[in-house]
Length: 215
Image (cartoon, rainbow, N blue to C red; front, side, top):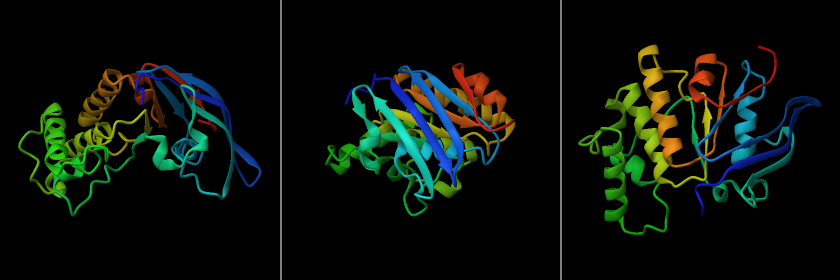
């Protein structure tokens, strides 16, 4: 899978009970961020769900999502290889920090030892060497965000979807985690879609901005 591939959203339309929430066309180059801004209830998270392949059937949706020549909307969710970061890190409480990352390594790496080595290297990249045996509940908010990002990155996604992942971080951490996420996405040449209601997030993303709903 070519990770240096852009993303195209063609004639995307998402409606609920006959009311159109989202209508957009966009193109995101590798390493670039498209920010979709709007208030709560404006349909931002439904766009993420549609692209990733888990939109609730209560919504009516149409339009194509293309990664290079691959139409993702024809594929099941697990075959789309969309990396997602949510408001909460969603770390597995029954797994160590290391195993939270190792579990996301592609199945093509069958050796448990290899998977854990990949996870250790991922922790080193975000200055968490030595944290592998820790219980996720003992981590700070910023540390959890770093683990969640590395879990996504080791899965080798073809795109990155950000569903307000910075909104629950305090002001001091928010800018730091934002910069880390965008830097990693650029380094991996991933097209990114960020949904947010925060103008500072959009400014930090340094990309195209589309507004939905009324702000």
